[in-house]
Structures are given as structure tokens and as C-alpha cells.
Amino acid sequence: MDTIWIKNPLAIYSGTNQNAEGGLVVRGTTIVELLARHQEPSVVVDYTVDASHHVITPGLVNTHHHFYQTLTRAYPDALNKELFPWLQALYPVWANLDAEMMSVATELALVELMMSGCTTASDHHYLLPTGLENAIDLQVESAKSLGVRTVLTRGSMSLGEDQGGLPPRHTIQTEQAIIDDSQRLIREYHDNSEGAMTQIALAPCSPFSVTTDLMKETARIAKQEDVMTHTHLCETIDEEEFCLEKFGLRPVDYLEDVGWLNERTWLAHGIHFNLDEIKRLGKAKIGISHCPTSNMMLASGICKNNQLEAAGVNVGIGVDGSASNDGSNMIGEVRMAMYLQRLQYGSSNISHFDALRWATKGSAQSMGRNDIGVLDVGKQADISMFKLDDIRFSGSHDPLAALLLCGAQQADRVMIAGKWRVHDGQVIGVDLEALINRHKAAAVRLAKLSAHS
Image (cartoon, rainbow, N blue to C red):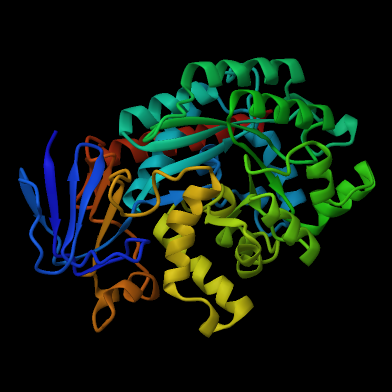
């Protein structure tokens, strides 16, 4: 169990009010000391890492993704569409996913995230066609082999087109199959302890793809098993109109009706809330995953981050699926969040500190995690280190601001649970060229299967 001094960073964002200009000391999986400038560690260290050329942040936390969608980036049939027609173009394609595709898509998405400074990633996987019933198991396996922290959500779709839903019937499952597998995954993989590397949450896809009964039963199981719940909500006006027509309720009223309006829930997107709904969400301690690039790409709208936070909502950041973002770059998403929110609130009301808070502490708390998201004594040693030696940073003066303003794209070093997982910009133990080749081949195969189906 090494004791490591990450010494004298160029700049550091700890997410706390404590002085950490002298760096921090890690022992095992946790942070044991924060140091002021010129302060020496109070413990014997095994080795020192010179961080004088690095900007340090807590490991970035991605609260919403669809790993499998890395296989359908810039897909021709889905270009230039809003959410509902975009989904209808892609559902038939995704229905052809198989285990090999799922594994390589998961690995590539996680590697891409880690290279961009992400240490904890949540995935929302809701497509489990025949033959891919073990999709979440494959994700657990990939994440463990890479050493990345994950909150994997067992997604589901049970409301087909013929029942008034959006997805085609061959992409949905029976409610009993969903419930049985949800309980199995919790038993086999969910870890509720401090520093957990793998957690399971339950995540019916959206109001337009699951039944009311499944939403209610999911809430009951989550409370019984003490796990989080996750879904898409208030992403578009189309969804709002669907809920009014189908249930006679606005989406937040529907959420309350099915037993989801509580601190175990975090929501993807959360754009179209009125002021009264924002107050109710804050009172319930709901979490929101702001997905700026996806929201711009699909023209869905802008999340009301400042009002949500002021009401008591935990606001985090998600890259969302790589088909609606076409990337899985977490530090790039933090920059997007800052700029999109400035467009809404003004440049003087959103700073780089706000965006970094959303991507770290806010993201962690939105998913019920208090052991990650800040650099503090006793917290998990999840640390991202960025160099500012690329041409884009030349002439910059404030290193921490430059990280976002100048557009950092890649971390130099990443530590997860006290272990180095990224060094010199590369994920340790991963043959990146071979991974990309496997992934490209899987994407081509998926497209061909879809063309013939």
C-alpha cells in the first residue's frame, strides 16, 4: 500500500475550501493529507510525483451515457433530427446489437472517458434484445478489467409501438423479465460500501417506453434494496405532450405518481421544468444530469442549472450517448456545460468553478455518492491531472481557467482508487489501436446487419 505525494501542482481545484497548493498525499485507496504551499507531508512517502506542470482536479464523474451508441456516431439515417424521429431511426439499428458489439462499445467508451479525466462513469443501458440479456454483466466485466469506477444502470423498455409507446416491439422485454434481471444484478454486483467500484441502479428508459406499472414496481424494488433510480425526463416538449396525452399528467406529476420523487432518483436532461416543479425537485433532493452537447445536437433546450441548484437539486454532467453527442470526452463536456449555461444566464453568472463543481461533487452527489467528487482527507483517491503544454494553451495565464477556456481534451495522468490508470495520456494496459480497429469492425457489422433486417 504505497503512500504517494502528488507535489506542488501548477493549479488545483479540490472542490473544498482547504488550501492544497502543496498537493496531496494518497495512501492505498484514499487521500490522507492536503498540503499548503511549502508544507511537507506528516507521513513517510514511498514516492513523489512532480505535479508542477499539471492542473489537478477531482476525478470527473459522468452521470449519463449510453456506451453502445459509440457504434452509431454520425449515422446517416439519424442526422439532422429531433429526439423522437432520431430515436425511431436508430431503434431498428440498435436492435441488432450482440454481445461482442456490446463489449467492445463499452470498452471503447470507458477508455475514451478515462483519457478525458473521467474516473466514475454511469451508463444507462436499456436495449436488451434476444441474445443480449447479459448486457450489464458484460459492462461489469469491462469496467473491472480497466479499473474504472462505475454506476451501471439496468435500463428497460416495456411499452412498444403497438401499445402507444415509441420503441418497436422487438426491442422491448416483458416486465417480469426486467424485474427478475434487475434483482439478479443487484444481488450479484451492487456494492453499497464506501469506495464501491461497482454499483447497480434501476433505470426504466423513459415515460414513452415503459409502463406505469413498471415504474411503480421499480420504485418499490429500489427502496427495498436501497439502490438508486434513473430515467430520462423532461428532455423535450414532445415528451411533455406524450405524458399529458397518455397519463393526463405533466412529467414531474407523473414522476411523483409512480413513487419516484425522492432522494434515490437522478434524471437525465431535466430541461422543461416550470418554477414550481423546480421547487418540488429540490425539496425531494432529486439529481439532474445536464447533457449540454446532446441537448444542442438534438435542439432539445437548455437545463436550468442555476435555478435547480438554488432549489436544492444536485446538478451533475453527463456526456450522454455518443450518437447524440458523437463523443465521450468528459473534460470537453465540462467546457460545453459552462458555455451553454452562460448563454442562458450571462457570462458573469457562470464561472469555470461552477462547471467543475457540476462535473465532480455535483455529479457524485446526484448519484448518491459522497465518497468521491472532491479532493479531501478520507475521500477516495480519484484524481485527474492535466498538462497545459499543447498549442491551445500557449499564452494562457490562469491555469485552472485555461483548462476549460482553452479547451483541454485529454488528461495526462488519472488515478482511480489510488491506482494509476492513465499515464502519458494513455490508459494503462490498453492497446488503443487494436481497440479502435475492433470497434470500427463492430460498427460496420452493425450497420450491415441493420441494412439487411
